[in-house]
Length: 351
Ligand code: UD1
Image 1 (cartoon, rainbow, N blue to C red):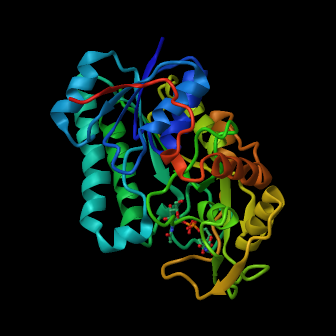
Image 2 (image 1 turned 135 degrees about the vertical axis):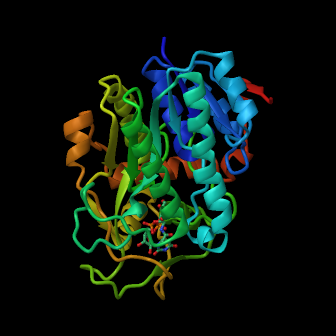
């Protein structure tokens, strides 16, 4: 059985990836420092799959501890999700973002080389494109990130390009995520942002459940059909399945690849809001506010390359995302903080 190391495996996206890997028959080892993620997610994903997961609670930048992880089990490939992801925060604390995101990838790849594991899927982001102005966005579009967060993703992509160029044994796929949303259909796994969520979908569900008074719609004067920002929302389960397909592609020894993971279907803020009103059956109050600094009008993917190279495409739409996000929010009004019945314990290891 192939064993995949998932960094950031307890995070929103990482936990959904672990579920799909376990269900596809891989053994999974997780690693992460749980500063933003919730350990309860690890219990939940074992509950969903009925399969065990070994998790090492440690920072990916801890070279010695990471070497220990590789020496304790034979890792076939790595999916690297660990990192900081709040774009606005990265403008205030660029040093944290470069240290965590670029420094983390650097330590990880060094240890991988030492251990002879040269197969990697990297969580990149569509924010590497910045303001394109020519949508849908294909992978060849210019990359001009508008914040340090995007710069860190681009730096890691470039590092992987150099590794693959210099060593034919290296194979790496950078997956550029558009806007992940939704939750596992079981309602057991979902997004549990620390503090005030930065992204649209968790903010809407928090308003719907009564945790916030209203949604701020950041601008209705964008050059779009209804004046609100347009994005490419992708169901987190579709996104996770894209990683399973990327791993399969890596067995073909493709070298370095960069692939968009988006649905290719643009929705405005008001269209997303309408989908959530439909899914929740509730009126979700909103107010029009000024544009958010650093925001862009439109971003959506050309997902053709993912279909051609990975045989992958998003099959879940905005109604599925709204329904699953709402189920998660209703079953877990306090995120992973409220556990009604204790799920099976996960094996947690500290090094
Ligand atoms: C943001 C980040 C991006 C990151 C992505 C991760 C910025 C500028 N971009 O992208 O780097 O990769 O999250 O998921 O921070 N909106 C509202 N009201 C809200 C929240 C959002 O109107 O309370 C609007 C935004 O203006 C935007 C859309 O909803 O039009 C989506 O926003 P968001 O979820 O923050 O994603 P992005 O801006 O695409």
